[in-house]
Image (tube, rainbow, N blue to C red; front, side, top):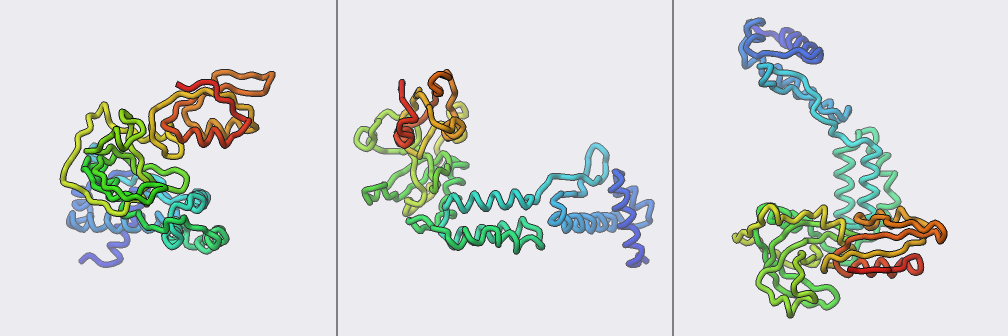
Length: 320
């Protein structure tokens, strides 16, 4: 009869051999020990459960996996799963600075991060390190929860499904209905946005640039109502929307044509300019006047706001 002591010895033996890099063939193991293959499987499952419980403390995922080439089970380090304390603190600070969510939602997200990512003995300290910023957190004025809506948009974009939205236009309070083809979700300075192509609209009447081929940008918190439609839209692979490339060239989430701009910069932080404009390149250095000629590609009018904010530090020399 298989006693508790026998099982413990078997599991310890299996665990030691796995740790030493051995491959465990279930059929051979059952024959060697005079037990069923099902019993060997249960022993392996017990080891998996033990390894899983260790993950939260060590941050390293070890698992017993079947290797087809070796016809048996091996112990493999899958990935580093748990954030380090420094990484977790950095993510929390970025979230607080973003002010992307209303206060109750932001606090709930931070609590979940701490509970799931921080070691039990460090959770109290992690909360204390962000306590002052949490207390003084100022939520955005729209005061809306929209994460479920954002997830629906993301799924619709993934599945190429059209959606119908009731949207509040900025500055006017006017509410319009739009049927759109969602392409991507973007985040910029406090707000989440949806990039989408509009269907069935008089572009000459509604758009400043009627032949603008690039997506329209919608702030997600301004979407009052959203309906996922059964209708699908087609996107040829060569024409697929690449939000990473688009994001490099769009400033302040203003739509518009792609333009190239060249300007002299003579401020104190060249690095800040190059970070602000990911497509920026230095094409000339004027050491005598301590300035740099920079060329960048951007979409729309948003870049104008930033250029004006730099005052005398920037002199625009060319747009095309």
